[in-house]
Structures are given as structure tokens and as C-alpha cells.
Amino acid sequence: MIIKLYEIEDQIRVQGEVRGTKFKRPEDTELNFMTPIAYDLIIEKVGEDFRVSGKVAASLSLSCARCLEEFPYAIETDLHIELMRKPKGLASELELRDEEMDVCYFEGDEVDLDPYVYEEVVLSLPIQVLCSDACKGICPQCGRNRNRDECQCEKPGASLLGEKLKRFLNN
Image 1 (cartoon, rainbow, N blue to C red):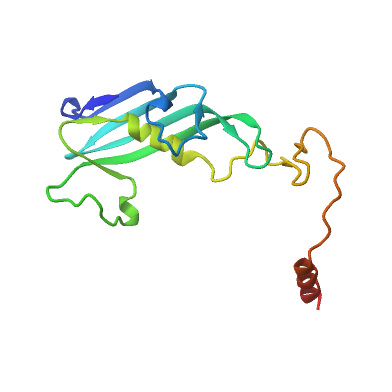
Image 2: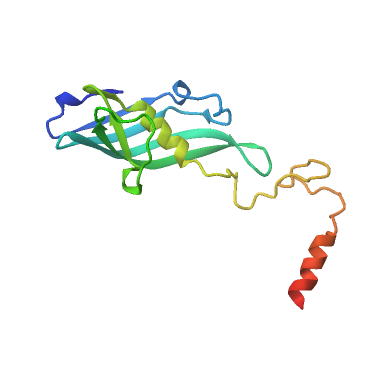
């Protein structure tokens, strides 16, 4: 959604949806959006800058890191960014301080909020996505999903390194 910043006197509320596939990058192969990304945002004018805050929600279909099964994953997160006019002569790459991590620079009188909404969803994903905390994963020997059935594979014994470490810690 493109926002005309010059029309904001104090604050406005914007609600809408954006298709997650619109901004999907080649490295986002694991992201399968089941629903559009919904947002409910307040854009507030603060001097010459703008503060954007509100709720972002989406449903995705993801693969579990342990059992590799697809499962639905819901994201509900808060978006908080500061929109500042890009100063003249600002380098395209610069080092940011901690307090500048939520600052986004813009040029002109309009801003497209959709990329920020998409980015918030991607940043809200856990590093290791699991279908449940109790997921048993797949058997490294036969490849069976241990959540569905137990396999009859021999349990691997302790490694030589593990035994040496155990003896060292017990002394």
C-alpha cells in the first residue's frame, strides 16, 4: 500500500492485505503463504518524520526442521519502524547504531509499506522451525518419521569421543 505522506496531518490508520508471494526472493523457497499478510497500522507524523506501528499477521505452510513434514504456522507480530527522509549525500551502505535499527529512510512524498510488512513476517520466523517442541524427527538410519511410528533400527552406541568425555567429567 502506497501512503501519500504529505496527506498526513497528525496520524492515519491503514488496514489491508498484501500477497506474500509479491516480495518472495529466490532464497525464500521455504516460505509458502497460505493467506495474504494482513496488517493494521497507525502512521503518525512526528515533526518531519513518521512513526509506523501496528499488527501484522499471516499463515504459512512450513517444513519442520526435524521431521521434514509440512505444517501450518501462524505469525502475529508487531511492526514498529521510524520513517525518516533520506539525508542528501547519505551513503547507500552505512553502519547503524542500536537505536537506528528500526529506522527506514525514504525519498519523495510517498512510501510503499508492503515491503516493510513482508520483511516483518520474515524476521518473525524462528531460526529453526519445528512442528512441535516434542517432535521426534526422522530416524537417521531408515528415514522413518518417528512421530508416526517407531522404527526397529539399532540405537547407536556411545562414540569413543563421548566415552572419553564422560570419563573426564566423572573424574
